[in-house]
Amino acid sequence: MNQIFSDLLKTEGLINPIPIDDFIFDFDSVFPIKAKRGKISFLLPQKREIFAGVGIIDLAKRGFLFPEGIYENREEKKIILPFSLTEALLDTEIRPRYFYYHPKRFPYEFVSSVSKGEIRKLFFNALREIYFWQGIEYQHIWYYPKGFYSAFIFRLDTDFAKAKEIEKTYQILKETKINATWFINAKEHKDLIPFFAELKKEGEDIQLHCFVHNLFPDYQRNYENIKKGKEILEKGGIEVKGFASPFGFFNQSLYSVLTDLDFSFSSEFGLSYDDFPFYPRIKGKEFPVLQIPIHPICFGRLLEAKFEIKEILEYYQNYIDWRYNNFLPIFLYDHPHRVSQFPELFQKIINYAKSKEGIWLTTMAEFAQWWKERERGGEGAFLHTIKADRESFSEGRTLTRKTFYFPFNRAKIKAMRSEISQKINFKARVLFWQINKYLKGRTK
Image (cartoon, rainbow, N blue to C red; front, side, top):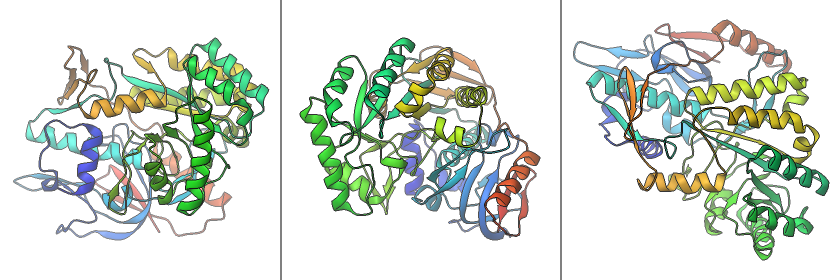
């Protein structure tokens, strides 16, 4: 089996795998159908079951577009993905990406150049289609313990926040009755280590952000920087198992360092965002440090995009609804100086997430521990079965299947892309190639 297929199945916890290579083909496959080849910038999902819950797929990769996305002959059906799964999911490039929303300007962040989370969803939607065609139940280990429908984490990067901003943020957390995951700038906040040690005793999840607020291109400087920060926290009585890179940046040397320093999990939106946790594979090597992706847009990016406070709240409420309705994790982040600046906004966002039925309020350390327990089929793990018309859980619950689609139509996205192109002076001939009326891609 394709190694990438194996990695995907590991994340999904699939119980009854089938020979996927016989049914799903991509750019790396040899398939006797004529296709237009070129560089695909992005793919737009349409309202069909196979694209349920899938948003825009940013690619910027070689690919091809077939006359039909689902190919049938008299004997069998096959699903053809118009790009290389291997190339897309192993990509480690970072570039600015706009996140689509209704106001005139879109928030942006420097993130992974490939929407790995959307590709993962598309792959498993395709896989479920195959199971249904074969008349087989799709069974996998559910993503959350104890029957939760989703999980919520709030991450705080301390960066260069002032002591009073950090203290106020903690008071806001206490009032909201939620524990956050804090990633500490050890050099900037060395004098606050005793305070963070007390926060840990109160249930806060305290981890490392950096010593020097930078990610270096080489192993040695990253090793010295991260090791020094880790030692400062540990001397203060804080055991460190998690890391979040400054600026969300990622490179191969980082994961080599994290492995050598015995970190358990990490979180970089330069590697992936809006995705399930996974173990990165770089140049054929799988690393044992669990990557926990988050949503990369924070208050600051929305303020830069001229969002008003009510629009920021609406943005997060819509995002929470979108993730929750599709049983996806909701992992947000920000900084103490912004949380302390907008306490009411922060509390409204947290309370909105807390209002969702069956949502697990957790931390990154707790979630990482659960995810590894889930891989072993340990305590709290249970089976999720999907049939063509309903879903059921081994603990006895049954759900009628609901389908939620990407909340933007094609015309809206085309208009957005046009506006973005003008803003960044991007000039290129844009061609749309149609796949069976359900999927559109842009090639340059």
